[in-house]
Figure 1: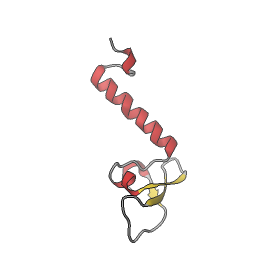
Figure 2: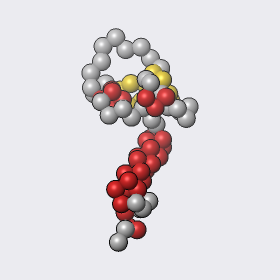
Figure 3: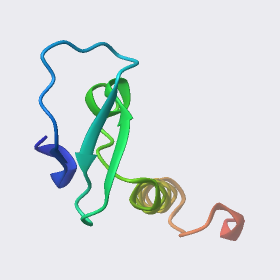
Length: 75
C-alpha cells in the first residue's frame, strides 16, 4: 500500500471486495478491514487514525468552502 503508509501483513492469492485484509497502520497498530475499504476508498488506517483523517479532511473542506474551521462559525 503506498497511500497512507500502511503495510499488508499476509499474502492473499485470491480476494474479493468483502474479504478482510490484515494490515499495519502507519501508527503501528495491527488491524483488518475489508478489501473494498483499502482498495476502492483508499483508507489504510486503523479506526482511531481513520477518525482523525476524516476530521482533518472535513476541516480542510469547510475551510476551503467557507473560510472557517467549523461550519457553525459561518454567518
